[in-house]
Length: 274
Image (cartoon, rainbow, N blue to C red; front, side):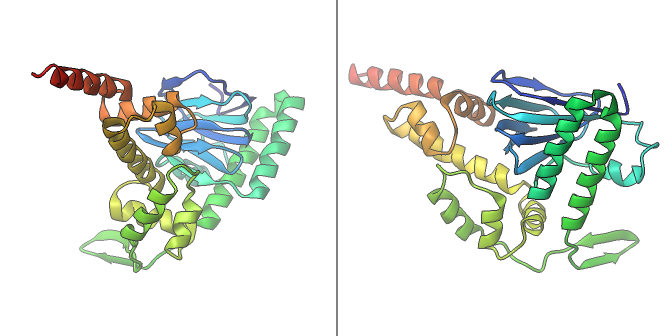
């Protein structure tokens, strides 16, 4: 594989699940791709991008209408690039990130250049990677640090996240497209700062937590209501029944339709007087 392998594509409705031996950056200029990394899901859109380090299992399914930039980065071949160490740090952990308007516009411009001059894909890829690094580096907010006992500094949070307030708001908006910016606003924090604090405090990302609450609420409806699975999917924020059923199975190790069949069989058994 080349050091930087950049391509423009449209991700279709096919569900793909795999891992690979290179890092990957995914940006979209339009459309939606549902993507999950090791159980944490989000949508890749013009406003949300994704970094996937090597060996991380991930699954995705596009809407067939997206225009997506996929950049593969070989593991040991970043040395020729400017700020190679910093670039490598981009892929220390998987993450979804906000894409500001300027970066989205740059991605659209570079996509057009890539399609017109495919032989320049490495140069275009390096420029895109550099722009992303600058964006993510600039949005980092450093909190106070403490050090001791010979250990490196540890970031500590002076803010407390009001989880009760967040839960109330999330539960009222399960059918909506919940964004980190909205959750951060409830805590009077910037999105980047809120994301870091939330993960440090609760051991998961905000959107993975939202996904869990969606599925927990869905489980109650699947077990105790007569609503169709498609209706339940829409009530808890899934775009269709298929994506809902896959997420439900991954989280609970059983499909919602299997739960319904078991419930129906149990009721029939009870109705016979057993």
